[in-house]
Amino acid sequence: MLEIKNLSIDFGGIRALSGVDLTVRENEILSIIGPNGSGKTTMFNCLTGIYRPGSGEMRFRGESLLGLSPDRIARRGIARTFQNLRLFMNMSVLDNLMLGRHIHFRKNIAAAFLRLRREELRHREKVEEIIDFLDLQAYRKARVADCPYGVQKRIEMGRALALEPRLLLLDEPISGLTAEEKEEAAYRIMEIRGRYKVAIMLVEHDLKIASRLADAMIAFSYGQKIASGLPEDVQRNEEVIRAYVGDE
Amino acid sequence: MDLVESYKEELRLVRKPWTGAGIGAVVIALALLPLLKTDYLLYMGTVVFIYAIGVIGQNILIGYTGQISFGQAGFLAIGAYTFGHAYAHGFGIAVGILAAGMMAGVFGLIVGFPSLRLKGPYLAIATMGFGVAIYQILLNTDAISGGRMGFTVEKFPALFGLSQTTTFYYFTYLLAIFFTIISYNTISSYVGRAFIAIRDNDISAEAMGVNLARYKLLSFSLSSFYLGVQGALFAMLVGFLEPNSFTFMESINIFVAVIIGGLASIGGAIMGAVFIIVVPQLVGGMKELVPVIFGVTVLVILIFEPQGIAGRWLKIRLFFRNWPFR
Ligand SMILES: Nc1ncnc2c1ncn2[C@@H]1O[C@H](COP(=O)(O)OP(=O)(O)O)[C@@H](O)[C@H]1O
Ligand SMILES: [Mg+2]
Image 1 (cartoon, each protein chain N blue to C red):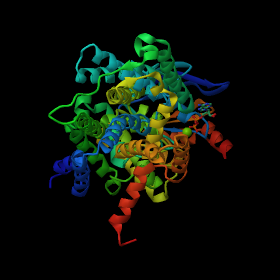
Image 2: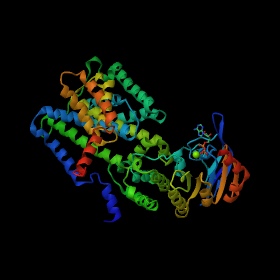
Image 3: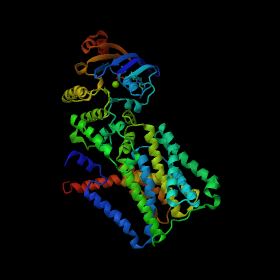
Image 4: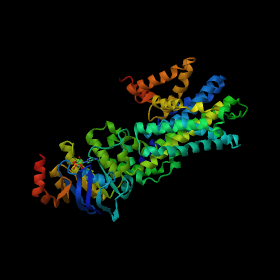
């Protein structure tokens, strides 16, 4: 469903991505590993229109994503989470998830002025499903800024799910969590794929979890793809080991 | 209660009976104010209603959408003169007010464009430039401003056997209520949610499918519409327009009301309007003191009570709700 060809981007002389190729199939979990600064987040930023790649092609469900603004890419069905959470801190948890429904709202400003809220109710039901799934019931009305870090990570995942994406990009969804939360989060990611019929690109530092979840894996180093294939093969790849050891 | 019913409950404008009673009491008290037969109070009330409209609009832009603006005086002027000319050409008051709002709204759209590129202080300067430009145009275009003679606007008529002051009081009272309700509705809708999302994190708002340009421009345009209406009502209130009513000081006044009332609070905006109208009356003869008082209050608020009067009010309420348990 997603095809990236020869993707490159520079930042003032630093080649953050160079000639990256990859494909993601329907309903697959693709793990992306690589040391810090190897370009994983940069690729997500290219995919979601936040950065403009210098060259290359990105095709999603047959259509090019190049030159589209982030909101239009979201409407094509790509949602993401951010490595350093980007939540709406002063909104309630519920409103954060409701904003995730934004692209699905039938927009009618007169109805907004007059407090006609049929749409609101319709989307609320979808959002409540996600709240149950992510165990956020106790935080529904809380301000996001007042929620603990682990909960904020779930909120961000919930907001992305509320968009009902076909492709979900998770940027280190497990980092910074306690051991117990990590297990839960890993379990949830598997669940998401089954429940929401979505393909997932998963950037993860923790190699063990990354390979357990993944159908396929690719490894980055200095902006280049150095290995791809089955998780167990990629993990054993010499170049990958060297990149990681060099990182330590 | 089934779930959908309870969601509906949460979407109501007034959720708690006590809130309803409190608001009802204020609304009724204001409706009864003319019984006191003090024109001074009625006049003050009218001015507060008129200003409240514009301040609420600015709070939508500044407090909820997070877009700074110092061009308020320009939009007020556009509203006031649009209304003045429409009224003078025989259009009715309703048409005149609508035209004033729409004209200001269109200019709001134009002034909003820099907001797609600029943030914070740069946007403040760009909008300030707009306000100053409108003032200069008024000074130099007699056809609009009536030149040295100024521009006379017929006052609001006396209706239903009430005095002119009382009639206009009720008229502005109803309009203020109307704009208050519309604003609460807008803020709690998908539109308001998009505004707040842009303020809190524009990058993720966009990544979640919010069209930044559309909603920023909508916020500018909507808030300018409010200022246009304020300008039109102001024209009828004073009955005489001159460019000096629309200097940069006027922008500051409204900005101060937004900050003092509390960012992102409609109720706060109304309290902010009360503040900027009532304080100058209290200091009476010493007009030079007003900017000093405003300046100091804004500083104190920004340091000690960033959520303004509205924030203080919430804390007091919370205190009494939990009383006597701490
Ligand atoms: N906006 C930017 N400006 C300059 N350099 C950037 C920018 N974004 C990323 N980079 C650089 O690109 C490289 C890859 O970063 P990143 O994609 O964040 O790595 P990862 O997510 O794999 O840890 C780093 O060298 C980083 O400094
Ligand atoms: Mg990263």
